Amino acid sequence: MDFEKIKDAVTSIEMSEAMEHRVKENIGKRKSGQVLFKRLLPVASALAILLSIMIGIPYFNKNGELQVVNFTITAYALSDDENQLNTNLSTEKATFELSTIQRMGVIGGVGGDGPNFIFTDVMLNITGEDIDSITYTLSEGKFVEDVTLPLIKDYDWLVSEKINFITTEPGSNISQGIKEIGNTYTVNYNEQEKHKYTLAIPHDGNFVLVEDIVIEVNVKYIDGSSEQQDIVVTQEADSISLKLN
Amino acid sequence: MLQQVVWSAELDVERIVDTYGNMLFRICLVMLSNEKDAEDVVQDTFITYLTKSPTFNDSEHEKAWLITIATNRCKNMRRYNFIRKHMDISDLQLYSKDNENYGLLDHLMRLPTKHKVVLLLHYVEGYKVDEIAKILAITTSAVKKRLQRGRELLRERYRKENEYGL
Image 1: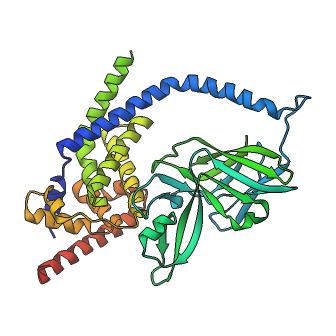
Image 2: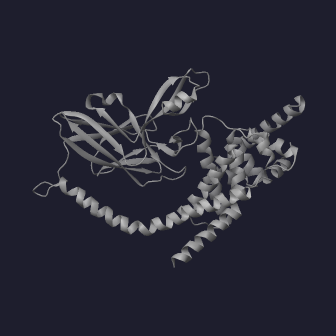
Image 3: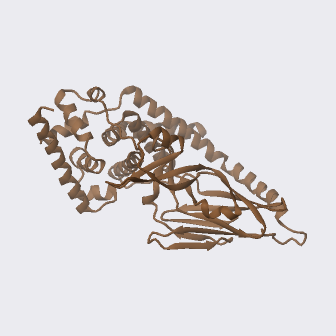
């Protein structure tokens, strides 16, 4: 085998002029967008602070004390050594050490390409009294569910069921898949065990795209009233942190 | 001032695409066996470069960084693309000057990704084993094994084709 010939064959590959022009144009557009975005950051930050103050006002009682919600949020996950980790969330960061490299993937993998995600393996559970249902809404990313299913080669069915990325051990009739739930879901308080949905965080193949992701937790009580608590999620190199906002 | 910033960004785009565009495109094309996907990865790699604006010691450092980003993106795209794609021989002809060339490219593209990427970096881009290990974040012994297995697979396929006239 002459590897010099392979080298010649590969080095003869070049982008067409049209492709080169298209790439330059697209990068240029995205880069200009970045410049504009950076210029708007101070204004956006000021607005964000103003909004936080305005939104934060109803959470203070008449004595000026911070009013906390009447339920507890527990985050749990399996660690890399398969031990279960769980912690009740507070305003202090709770960090789960979960190596990232094994958990990167693309939503929409079965049906074609899609955005990249880090599958975090982190789940949430609520405890409290007289709770009817809980609605979770993610600011960025998706909730996903690990599913086990018989060996299926019907890609259209998998796509219609939003089951992305399936793997099958050689010789096995069972496949493991990831099902996309969406950026929001509602679960009855007594049925939380049936919904083991984890967080999938957007990244670009190398870096996380959004620094802080917010999960809005809205708890509806049996008497019809409701309470809301936000969780800030931060994906770092080989860990994921959660804290109450 | 703003005009100057935009002008310098345009210059940067021109420079990196002219310098590294073809090199990244051929790595991505061989890894993904799909022209559109390869173009997307090249584009995303350059956008990441311009967005992150990393600092480099020299042009070799810059080149290695771009290859790392591009190969990682290719691996992710490939790993989760359940339907494996392969380039049609008529598409390959667009990139090859003669019959022998596109036969060789076809053999190379049909290799497992982990083997073809080390073959590419070693035989085409001229990287040494320890340099490839750094770029791909794997051990030097893994690079050696992949090189050896990649060569064996290529030889095997080439031999079969000649034997059976496939």
